Image (tube, rainbow, N blue to C red; front, side, top):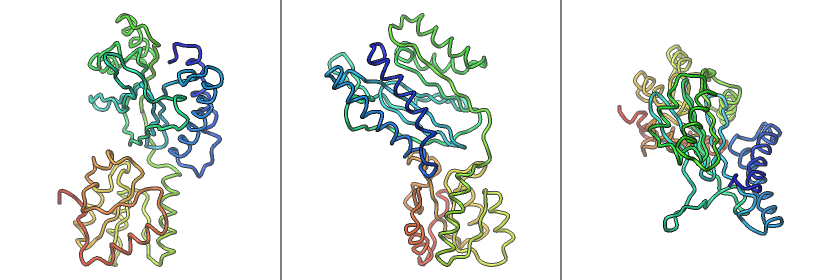
Length: 318
């Protein structure tokens, strides 16, 4: 839609409003909540402008794909037919889906910013790894370059600005007649943890201690193993995140349940089901509370596990 003047205005509005408003949101809001609030407000404005100025839902319309990198997590917001690809250890995959419908031999956008008064935006959170490369493209790129060629170009070790220029040149050489936009982001380093993760851990500790439980608090899987190994008394339950830097929750649970066979395990996560499934924790034998964690839900689940005759399995492969 950015080929029209109205589409260009809509695209500019989407980018500028998100960048300016995101850092003005409350620190207590999650990335998902903040992003959805901003995009919903922007969508309402675009829709109203399209109706009043152009008397059409096709007026102020734009596709939009956003990556918010926070600590060791990528938060993806997406609507329309722009795309985000991820290159990880030689595996190149599209992590967004195109919101297009086909009518006879033509395709049309069925979801985009400004098309409808109610916004339905795709959201996905993914754990980051050092070396991850994200490629963001408009249809003027990916409709004219096949995925195999895109992967080959993205794997070039040249400067990312140069790689982006090569991708756009390839699309142009392939007679692209649409907007040529692409951006590459590479993850060179990741932090061990951040203040948000520590805050969630401290919050859960306060809730559990407030419920009358004794808590051993650890900032990593390695630290948890050390605390458990040096603790002389019994440990009834492990409460751990599924996705953690260095050692995942299931890996930690496997090590601890091997040393303490009676240990019950409760997981938590704010990631999408597809990510959790990669760690095997969507198995019905596992217990999980989703983030954001409600105090009553956490205490009720802990009580439920402790009251069971036998603990559930800690690892799908044990």
